[in-house]
Amino acid sequence: METRAVYPGSFDPVTNGHIDLIQRSSALFDKVIVAILRNAEKTPLFSIEERTEMLEEAIRDLKNVSVVSFAGLLVDFAEQIGASVIVRGIRAISDYEFELQMALMNRRLSSKVETVFMLPAESYSYLSSRLVKEIAQHGGVIRGLVPMEVEKRLNSKFRNK
Ligand code: PNS
Image (cartoon, rainbow, N blue to C red; front, side, top):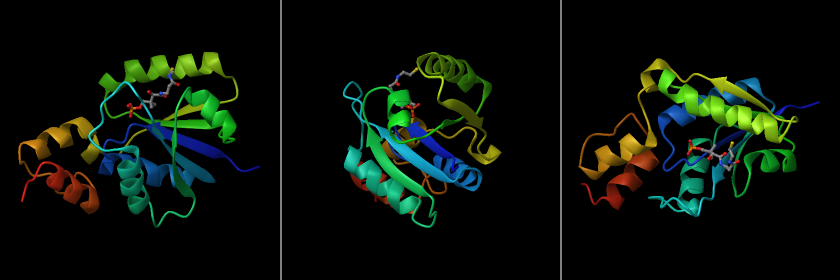
């Protein structure tokens, strides 16, 4: 039977660290569903449509990866799409506490889904969407941290160059 993994997140915007994890997951699982959270509470920089477009562009060459958005509980969504694995990235020990809490809570909510933690390449271990946005906002160099399409969109949002 094929193993489907869901890789959830805000992806506001997708970074090269996310892409690195998607590539690693795509080599490991039969199907990877990148799931963007539709969260009414947070005010994102990019709309769901923009985030979907940027992700789709970035994963174009990975044939077993698709991009969707979801609302509500992650475990419910995972069950709906037949995913038995939740993939989450851990960059540094500081991520671990929150990720452990989420994984154990998700396990309590559903015994059908297992969380798998993966490490991105070391060069992305200090990378986050929040930092990339902050750097772009102040006109700093983000080349190499995000896909080209994302760099373009960030620069045009903040009217850099
Ligand atoms: O990229 P992020 O913001 O770290 O992703 C967080 C995400 C989307 C994985 C998390 O907020 C989530 O799963 N939200 C869906 C609601 C849910 O299931 N909450 C209970 C988690 S224990």
